[in-house]
Length: 69
Image 1 (cartoon, rainbow, N blue to C red):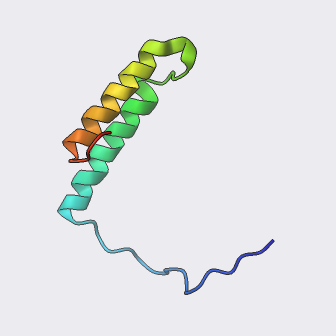
Image 2 (tube, rainbow, N blue to C red; image 1 turned 90 degrees about the horizontal axis):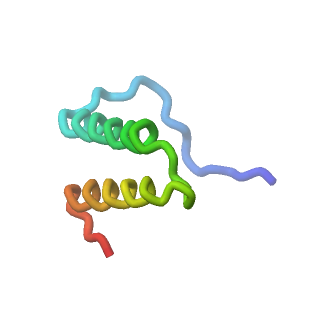
């Protein structure tokens, strides 16, 4: 199966990141490091780490003004 995508792919040099984008990039890298390095094991046999991930995600999303349900 082959898909056709409309429009053309972007070519050329990307514009420099804005200050807010750089801040967001750093925060995202920090979150990813925390998830991948600080709490790397996530499975049912390591239930406490699942709780740590849950707490981390709730805190991170709440600080970003998301409503947790």
